[in-house]
Length: 444
Image 1 (cartoon, rainbow, N blue to C red):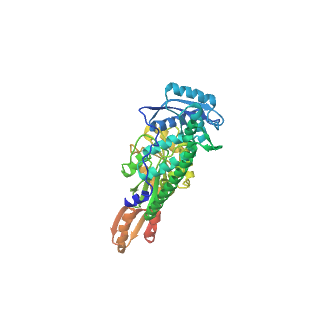
Image 2 (cartoon, rainbow, N blue to C red):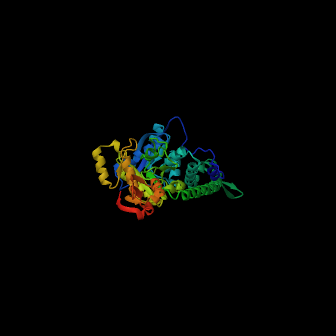
Image 3 (tube, rainbow, N blue to C red):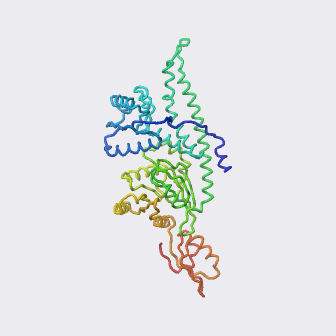
């Protein structure tokens, strides 16, 4: 505990309100540009996800709107007529925000608010507000704070522009124009934010080094990591495998911190399993970068369990999005098992078809515990490369028998006159202990 405190004591987080301003009832319209190659169905499903994000942030959605364009407008994202109509509908419904299903440039956000009197939130800001709410530990809070600052830095002009508008952007003084209050404040804020970013980066670097030391201390342990789209059921599976009691909620990004536990397999091989933050489409790159300390667990894994909700019609798309994030963090080459979760929510015949479509995948229900033994068998086969060995040991090697009980699974043990006959399941890397005593071997 003292070590963990030392990692943070040089950077103390202040209590700040990053979350969207709270009122009794927050409401919004959501809107998106449909590009040429995007189908109406894809757009609808993407807006469904945005609505779930808004719900997680505590915002009720009153309506949704789309505009078909080849590309978003560089200055206002949507067209002028579309925004004028949206502003009229927003005021009529007394909605608090317009939430846009994309990351806006600082210019786009500023122009929409200035020219159309619309309080706008982009997808990234919405995700950051959810992360801010769900960050419980100091490590998670540091990582979220870093992402917030990286997001805010280029947008200071939007935040302070109203000062110059109220006071005039320049004043005559001895024949020279002076800068407005907002512009001066922007420069001050930029320096403060850059200082904060540097301090948080230093703190996160110390966390990363501390975790690296911990990993070296448990180098003998194989590392298994759960990854997947947010709300795929990773934490439920983690609890099922380890009895860890990790928070499970039916909401996006319920888990932000990496949690690790020992996993007991049929052999005695030491395995550490970690649960991680869920991924999502259009995940802000600076958010991924900020969570480098947490995502180190993924990059360092020997095997990934890629958990996917097969009851969701977009599961193939979610698989692609997770693979994209894994590639961006340098983890795409790590072996993985695709875990088709929530199989209890769909027809058995469909489960069989999906299992055939995704060869090597294991269909389970983390909630009901179905097929968990089959999943663990797949993990052992891929992670440990278990072998079934028939052995004959001399009585002088009784200490080795004890060792085999620790590192493998003894299936039969027979003490005869001429020696000790064993049938043992053993990871391939442990075979060297018994090489000279093997009578017969087979792959598990």
